[in-house]
Image (cartoon, rainbow, N blue to C red; front, side, top):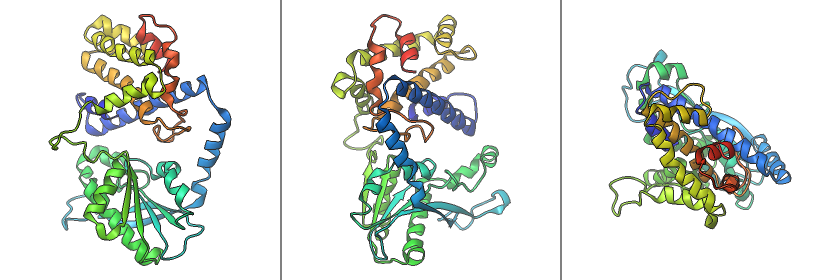
Amino acid sequence: MILFVSFIQTLEVDQTERKRFAMSAASALILFVAVLLWSINADKPLYDYQLKLRDTLLSNCTENYYKQPLDHFNYGIGETPNNISTYMQRYFICGGSKWKPNNTIFFYLGNEANVELYVNNTGLMWENQDSFQAIMIFAEHRYYGKSSPFTEEELHQQPFLYRFVSPDQAMADYAELIYYLKSNKLNSWPSPMIGFGGSYGGMLCAWFSIKYPQWIDGCISGSAPILDFEGLHPPINPKFYAQTMTFDASTAGGGNDLCRDNIRNSWNKLFNLTKTADGRQELSSIFKLCTTLQNETIGNATAFWAADAISTLSMGSYPYPSSYMTSGNGDLPPYPLRYCYSVSIVTDFKVLDRIFNHLI
């Protein structure tokens, strides 16, 4: 998604439209990938068990809301629709069958999605709550799910309203919520507070433990690239992400080297086709687009759209069925790139047709 959204920045549409187009297009493609892959070779008993288990998690939770200031750091926040200065942050209280006041609290620092996605997919918390006699809190990130201060129409018409969404504001939300929970809602001031987060949420958790050490006793950050920024010393390896994706698609990673090579060979073919009108016509036909690609910029965006699907399969390489990478819109099978063998059965030169027909 990072590659696709960054490339869509070049299109002549505003920020909200770019985000809506990128998310809807990628979600639709990923869902199609999930359904197609799962139809190839599904382990139905395991799949049904995982779905049943996941679907019961929210029934062990209660939905709650806490009033947060729109801006934690400034008195004069400027003009807002209806002059609002607060919003209601959603959070779930889950599990806790063995919990009692002063016992451990597991706190999930929500990231860029509806918090229900993390309730359903953060197995580490659910698996360990009983052994720690803990209760679980899943806090939703501002501007996501049911925790947005503004409607989509307001954000579309007034992009400056996005100024209130930032890691600093989100962490301040979590600090206020933890204080409220320990001092009021749960009445459990001495409770150890253990933070959890993944990806951007894991970065928030790590940063939160530095900025607000008084509110958290430890933090488990999964897949959190807190050092993945330009200008660091020593510098990061800029090819690490692509190398990991390649490994997942290869025989060494449980995939198939022919699949890896076919996907690798497809990129030059894709980008070369975007350079000419005839090439874009052919690419539009291969990808069965409703309209012909009009220029190289849009053609390149389409190439990155396809690349994003493969990237998502790599990021969603879990050993069990999961809807995490599809934001709950369909399930990827276990180790999804291992199903790439179907791309590799025949090694002819129609790489793009084969990738589209068998993978995308």
